[in-house]
Length: 100
Image (cartoon, rainbow, N blue to C red; front, side, top):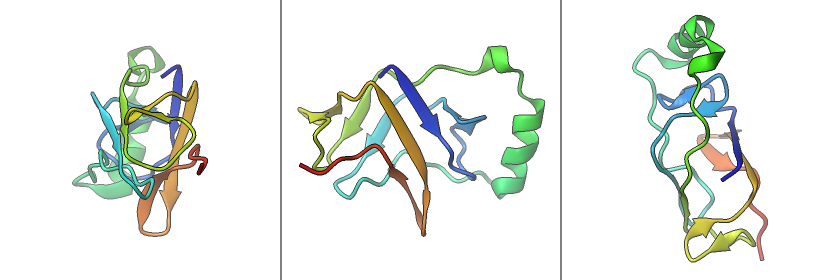
């Protein structure tokens, strides 16, 4: 995975749109199963982002496990060069998904 941008407003792994999860898992419906809600919610995430220095932000995980029907799904791994994950109503989804 070359580039991953996550705009989730309440996830333990998200910091300034960078995901620091070791492995990202996308289910059959395109929902990010790796999302872990922060104990302090979106407000805590805002404070963490204000404190974070840009040089400590991690790059995207090298492996995105995917079970969704998508043109980028190659043997249950995402082959896209970039990926966007964002909040939608009641879940966090892969916005890069293109159904076959």
